[in-house]
Image (cartoon, rainbow, N blue to C red; front, side):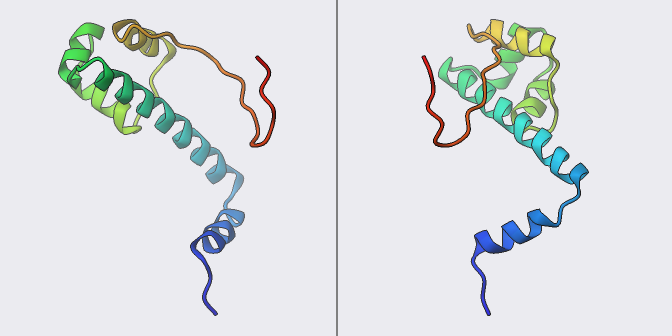
Length: 102
């Protein structure tokens, strides 16, 4: 009997340990940050090296952040945000289908 991809993934996820689930959540958060940094850097027309110079960091550090292989500290995020004319904010999560209030 064949199963859909979603069924197989759901079955595998149900078998994960709590530690594995937590690690997956950390990775997902790092990836979200990575995409935001990458998108903002590209919107400003900067290379990784140019952004790194603005932040007083190495290009390798920016690369690791953008690849999601490291979770930057709050201070590092503030430096990057300042260089990209952005801000670091906490935003409340909403479940799918929840109405957002202004």
